[in-house]
Amino acid sequence: FVPVQKHSSAIGPTKWQQNRKKNNQEYQYLHLPDGDNGDGVKNPYPKEAVPDKFWAQRKRLFSRYDEGIDIGGENDSEMWYSVTPESIANHIAQRMVKMISQSRMNGGNIDTASDDSNNIVLMDLFCGCGGNSIAFARMNSREDNSSQSVKVFAVDNNLPRLRRMQLCTALTDAASYSCTRTQSKC
Image 1 (cartoon, rainbow, N blue to C red):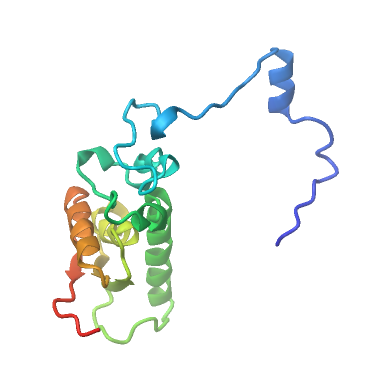
Image 2: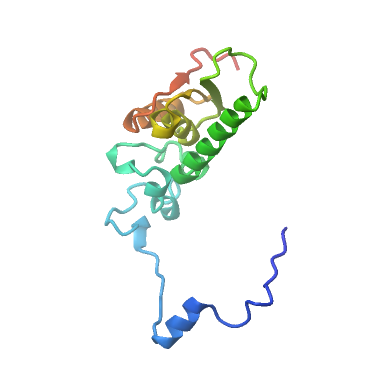
């Protein structure tokens, strides 16, 4: 728990509150029914499998959701709340690649398996439907990162999730490698 204290200069209402009061405006925020996020598409899944609050965020999870990306549906509802939203995954990928590149330029020894300093190899264990894996793989298409090659190995113990991740990867033009477990001895 981190306590947050109000600064002494923050006495009274904020400028936004003052302007709203001055203009006599009243805002009411209402949720649309059945997971509609304003585009008119209602949640096609049972509420127990995919709650409306997750369905309404589908384009926040994957901006190209309407182009065929499959997060899980009623067969694998866990993916709806465990996938990293696209903007957060992109931010993590940018920070990690930048950190690795800077460490290499400063003589750091992050990885000893590769002699090629232009390659970054990442392994995403338990990738799920690939939120982070796709963000890392898309780092290859950045203009300012043309000298860095990012290879991603996505690993999961659930084959349908890996298939979903491969579909999402194909739809987002990310060059990703998938490792599948073909034989189960568990």
